[in-house]
Length: 281
Image (tube, rainbow, N blue to C red; front, side, top):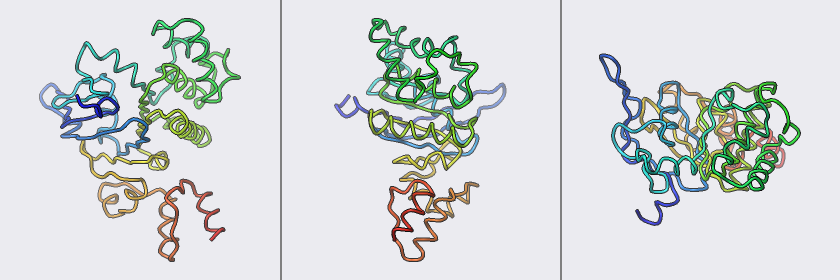
């Protein structure tokens, strides 16, 4: 592999089919995609677009029917490399209850590092770091099953972060959360990406969840339908409408303001930020 392949995720002509009793369903077809270390990627699509299949291909839970999935040059269908791949790439799923297995938050977060064979002092250091990163220090000795949905998702996130992955894949992590908890999780992901340079791959069918992404990949019927910055993707109303997707309210407002002759900064990610900028103008 070239040097560049050592710091990226590559999907090379990847297709995935699910064989039924008397038929075959194509979930992904001919996906070519490169994600560099440190990027913040949003993956958007309606149900059955292939988003969750893509997530599970990235850490080898599923194997491609054709093509290759490479994590830092290592193939996910290689039994010799899958353990190392899963240390590099952590996953957070939609329902945190399916990920939480220990009776105490601290033990939950320590579970992964302990299984890496790290010494106790390093495990404790990682637990402290991960709890602080998601703002859950005060819940250290609580039982996970007694926490709110948003708190459980933060614990699930902290338990993956304690493994110190270089890539973090999140499959619909906000779908069961209230608006406040959803915003908190998204803010934590931004900070993790910016301050710790961990690659974020956030998968959702809610366009509003993906406004912080630097690059947005829109899946439709198993193929890459569009990609670009969120602003570039959400600007093409006709293509979105053709597959049944609506633009977030933020981008509808931005279009109206720009039609009045004003240039809106690409860093505007929320309606309050837009209002503040308009007031300055």
